[in-house]
Length: 89
Image (cartoon, rainbow, N blue to C red):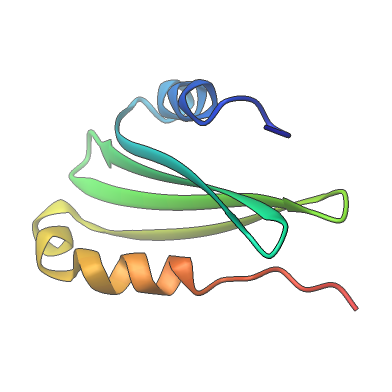
């Protein structure tokens, strides 16, 4: 828990965005800790955010879409964000 618990980080990020936290998950892949968040923003936007810590650096990946489109493309967005892996040479 390099950044804190996934629930605490998600709640803090949601408060800063004036958004509703829909989902907060963490996973470990190849020794890298990933945090994944889903937010519903007041303007009708759905935001997915993935954070990870690797080799002392914080990496982020962000995707946004209209809430009405998200339900049709949820799996695609999950696959895109899930495929991200930080690499340092």
